[in-house]
Image 1 (tube, rainbow, N blue to C red):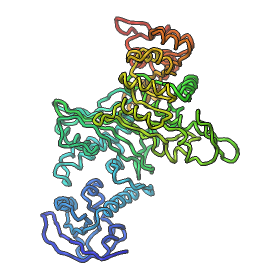
Image 2 (spheres, rainbow, N blue to C red):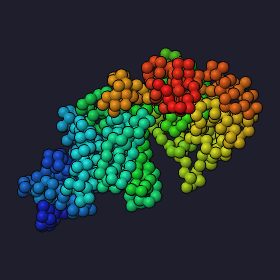
Image 3 (tube, rainbow, N blue to C red):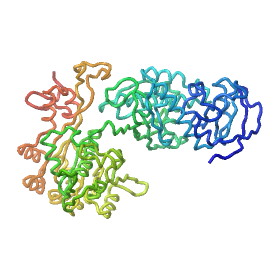
Image 4 (spheres, one colour):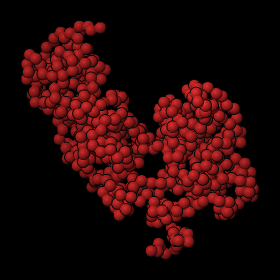
Length: 616
């Protein structure tokens, strides 16, 4: 129902307020709800072209077209509490007087988004748009139509202090940060570093596990860039002397823009917006706060929903999945930071949840298979995930596995529609929620499968062992160089040898090595930033415990003895897996030396120790 309401109007020009009056405007709420159909007309093209979406959204201002009674005046919808300086700046940018019309903030915010979405849609020639949730930062506002991101970034730096719409240059800073994130996503970076130094500020991307300096900013911009990132993560902008951690979400791909994420589609495309999570950490340094942004883009990680995407060799995959199909025991993933351990465990949890469903018959019936729980038939796919209780304790939670779209295989349709029934908990030391205390409480939640982000201390290790011995499947990680060393690491944590032998099922060691860039033959080009590499592939080493190995563990055998026994039984080492990739031309000897051999020389006969450097 449309009701009459009284709205205040104020005429504002480039020289400041000139007059004020009160007019009765009928149907103001309706006019805000449909700005392109109200009596004042559509938002003027000048407003949509000159006033950034971010500024309009932040200050809740939207053009209602020219004043019919005075065509030289711009009508402007504003919220009741908008500051007059924002309206003054709009008048300066449009170079005409402004008459403000009060409107409800919620309706106005929605109208602003629709107006700018329509403007982008029109410019893209029939490209469809999807409204973006207001709590998600939409970085497309600053990248639509940008073909050369590097040039756009250079312009954003030059224009940082020259924007009239903010007295402190906030709008250019927003554009600069958005373009940095967009470029990082284009290049498939896993992390963005903002590092202030005495005479410059470095912006660096971690690409395929290696850090590259993307550009250098003037040192005066560091504080503004860091403040903008803090705002995105809801951190304390005024706190500069203490580290802070936060998260943010940006939306990309809604309406129009350049395809990101390796799809290979160039030019203007229309797509549903994808949410990209950011994990943000700030740390005070000598020349200001430095920031590291971890980019968590689930669309670039198909292995999170399809185990085959991990790229394990067939034999290792089969043996590994056989171990995680057991109703109890401990399965460990080992390797240094950044080797993909957590990703492997996430893919494992998704596989465990999905593999309970097996379909048969011609009528779409389905059977649920769960070790220890029997099976049940029926076609209600909404109940599939409830057959197994999967819980995690992590530091931090990187991907939301319960979100829609977590299932990616053909048989996981129900999971894609409803997400995986997995409960994830994040460690919080300030509330005494550590791995050990969290694991202890998880055991009171009747779990079937437990994932512990990392076994760091004796208490966590003991609880994990006891959980596995009492009928739970426990997945976790350790920081060891190879699979046999995980056994000795558990012994070093004062776990009794007979308990390790009884509880441990398998250990998967892994590394990520860079692939040779096929397009340039590894010679280096602009697409691979001259490195000769693009993308990464996994190396895997799987130690499966058998009776002989268990007896050796009980006798406190060394890691070397365990390795010798496992290799005699068919275990393939990381070096062997890497050498095969080198022979196939997938990677290079130098890359394998960097990631796996750590100072050994790779020869045709195998790795041998070298004390005088790497020979040619």
